[in-house]
Length: 464
Image (cartoon, rainbow, N blue to C red):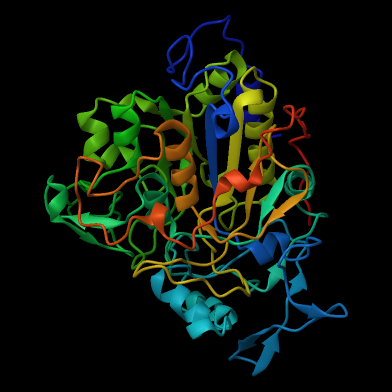
């Protein structure tokens, strides 16, 4: 078990209140009905995997296509003139491939879904630092997949709760845009603090939050002036926290440069911690709502979870290559166990996903809903005492569904809509209202009694 998990799970607080205020953390009435039985939503965002790479062999899911056990899909290798078929990868450390906007387009290849090996090899050329999203890893392993043997806890969550096999990253790009969509439904670049100055920016929103061109002057910090979900939550007095694990983040802020991992913490805005650069967060006086993950473990233990929780890992626990899969699984298990073993479990919904595809293979062509996406398919799970058991959700989803669910539970269905949210910006689409987007409510059975926790051993152990 990672040391941070042991320390935080075992931390005794003697009943002291933490950053979420004492008393009820949600305005929804006690004993609500339907989705209002959920009073705590937790979004855990891991890194850089596809559905096929983690659940491509899960029974009943839309996984790797095969006929009589023989795979019927492959990705051409321009170096060998062979087509590389999926294979069982038992390695704990994977390389992945480049995962910027151009790489997504090349991997998808106008719906052929055959550019993965070529892009992984292209990304390795002249690239010695794997933390750059324009780079590949030290090996071409994008056609590899894991099974229950390597990720038993993730498969156990699928066995006991809900696995979603059509969850797409909201845009075809890398970590920073995905995290911006996660909290705001848009990735933009703004020329001032007025939301009307923002323009669509899928690949390079704002100035890079961490500028690492050696020897060059640091530019002004980005100004994320458009409207994010915390603005609506604050207006309705709905509590929220964005928990950040201290450590490092791997991807460069600009995919044109190579960089080493940089420091990450709740007070260091970055690609996985974008909220401190949002004007709304600063204007609402809620910068302290972005806080260290130790406070999550305290809140879960003492029954003080906020209504809305986001959790971001640091590099070693993120599963972002070259981080170990086993370390990420142990970290997530510790987070889930903390919620399950706390007094708020019976009113909690946990949504677990991976922010982008990381260059790994997936066979499903992403739907097009607007100029920004969707991007490629990623693994996603729903864990809750009201979640259906061993249910595979085949609805088309993206991270927009998380925002929609939060709005439906806590905000009476209000949307991040420039026409109605009181803070108009020129976003191209109200993502929650896209007709193709499914409803997360379908993953729950609110007529059932709350189900008991499924507490798993975090330290599943390293593998080869």
